[in-house]
Amino acid sequence: MARRVVKADSARWSKKSQRSVSSAFTKEYTDIDYFCWRCGKRDVFNAEDQRDSYEVKKHHVWQRRILCRGCWAEANEIRKHLATCRKEWSASKATLKTDTAFLSCWLSLLARLEEYVPYKPDTATKGMLVKLMRQNA
Image (cartoon, rainbow, N blue to C red; front, side, top):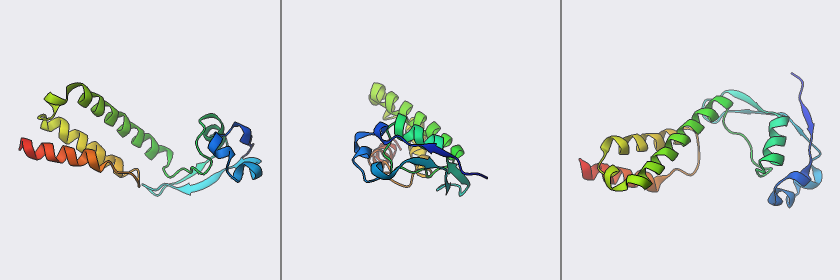
């Protein structure tokens, strides 16, 4: 399969990326093959996606993909559910701190997300949820 090449415009990168050594040398993006950290499937961080990521979304140029598209979509679904849990918690903490089903679901979502992200586990929230569930037992 032919590698795609897309012209790079480092002037459109984030300020932090523009200060990197790469800004002087990067003239184009080329497809980057990688294996998914979670499932091991081969995928491609294609040149167009790189341009969108660095020039439009302003992600740092050293950022690389670690999840295939399928695992990335699953991780984002888990993040959406976690955001809902946090929102409900903020609105109804007094009631939800005794709702074992809610606490268990939230804890399960946090554990599932760790399957997709090899860094920054939310140990503080997990600890709080375990403590509350023990108090409710």
